[in-house]
Length: 112
Image (spheres, rainbow, N blue to C red):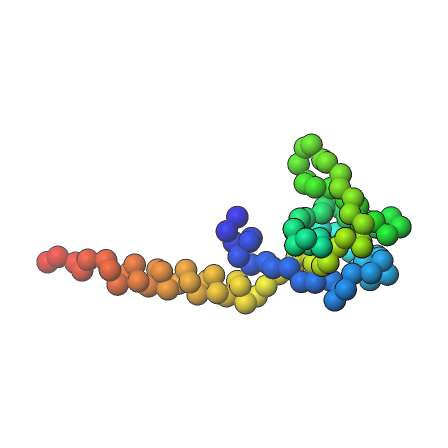
């Protein structure tokens, strides 16, 4: 799980979410997973997202119970989608290599 979260980030799909920009994104990526931030700053994930009118709809989680969620776009301040981050991946691998190097240096030497 650490590798999945360390190697991914979110990227805004549009500077200011409008029905047209959201519909364009969802046309390219049907059943998308989106991170929305509402006007109060509260963020949440929407799975299997789709746009109906000016309301973004989807599921709160991927497991049972599959509660649905609906958020009018006028209440949404940001919409972001997950993406792979090479920088984070290299940072994680570099950190692990550094830890292994320090551990190897701290090991006691052989006794003859």
